[in-house]
Length: 255
Image 1: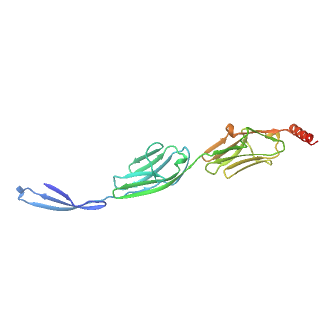
Image 2: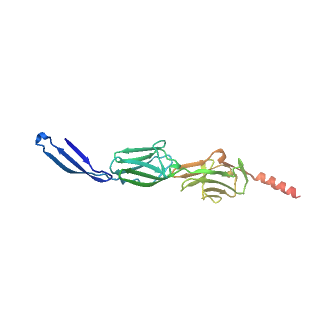
Image 3: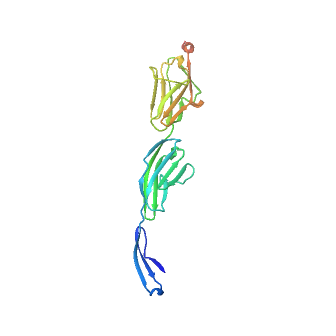
């Protein structure tokens, strides 16, 4: 008959086991006692590879992958901005041997933040954090003004300004279009973009300046054009004939 006795095992430990061997009385009642030392090592989790901070575009896929060493069983959990993530919806968690990964299938602006991975077993815990920046397409938060009028009328020789406000990740490039053709800066055409506001200023208006104006904004994630009906500005140039009538009426009133 062989019996094993364990005195203690806890954490990273060495347990002392006593094996007592009783030989049958039929074998001259010989008892043999053997004392042996049995060592069982447990190792805490350690990250041997971790993902770097990432900058990605809206709609792309993000993958955080890390490699671990340590004794099983191992529990690995993911957090975003201190909130636990579950493997559902836009998030998928995978485990293959000692590699653990978090997949975000289609990035949204709300996925931007600080991600933490926590690995733990019975003898220790390890964590790492990394950052994810999500770049979204620019969007218009204030349409082309003056926007209260469906059309804007100005006299030949006068000036007009159109402007709109934007939001989105910089750098943003802004261009203006007239009848779907890009405008270039000239002596009487000024295009500026400051503090998320795009401005088109035209001086010394001529009849050929009349038309439909749109604003287009672009960054690394894509482009957006303020081209809906409410975002367009139709500029009508009032010609010399109307100016003459106006001056005639003004002089007539003075008389």
